Length: 464
Image (cartoon, rainbow, N blue to C red; front, side):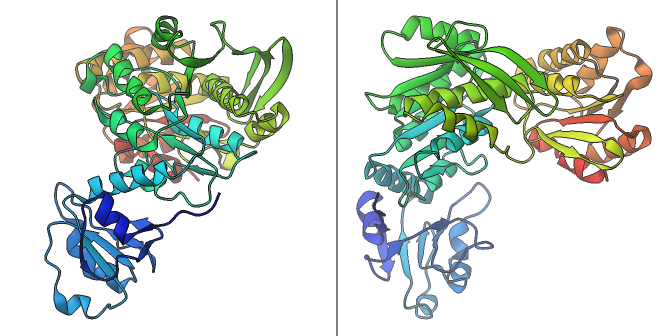
């Protein structure tokens, strides 16, 4: 694949840009929306947010060596442009809309496999493990971190150079968001990991969450394939109702699927299982703990086989998979203490999975530090209480709750017989650190889990 470059002229033609200064033949090599990390030669994006207009920092961008500035709603001073005769400045109506249109145009220039991943839980880790598998055959561009929104996804697509495949993550909070993203990325394969309760406070029901996630199909190539977790109740129902209309690959543990795992062995540092595929039994080893990573690996196998990657190479890619930081990141501290740092985000489903992982760990005591889950609306109390029930379903010795909503977790376990002397309540991460340091002992296993806005990642850092 040869490298395809965009120019200022493309901004003018595709995004109705107006050249204020410089050359329309200037090349847009890479893009940056933050002057603090901008590198010489990059295109500066003056994105307007709710509280400020990033375009006002165009002079700082030029000082840092920006080759091109894409701006909106700002007056460009002639005395500034005269200082940087080799730069170009383009004015657009809306910088975010501009990069979306540029990204859609750039995607149209590439005839390559594009795998789009969405779902309530596990998008990032599934995206990463799929990219690992596809890298056995392709030069893969993938979403970094969780750059999965109306800004992050276009910026990912705009990084396309000589890549021969792309794996993107698509997140959403409300209707219409995935519709926008899928019509930029135009996937050849759409992956839906599950339909849970994340953002249920905004969308109102799991059925509405399914509807919002299924917007991903709007941009799917006509010959494209849908890959779904067949064990998820709503996805299974969707499959039964729509399997005649789409090319669908299913994976699962319980429901009969194209890719099924059997003889699962869950361990504290990973898992293994046998893959039952076309009557052949193949052993798979997953280096990350938890049944949910069995599902992630089955999804990656489904995509890998779709793109004709040999099973031995798929096995190797899964075995060598490394998890994104703060997502089920197991840390070994002094005195034999183990920490599961999983505080990037949280929903009922991911809390349940994390507690099950803690339960599998070999330790004399297991401590769960659980903080608030966000965006649950009218379901906030119910779902926090359901997390409390999951604490009781697992062998947890000590519970520390962090935040107002997580008090429902503590209330639930105490009502159902959990020793109240082993329940601690903290208002914030700072208080939780104090509590934890008072009770921690050598060889303890500790889970730290909450929505990202609770900032519980500092707790793991505080334990030496």
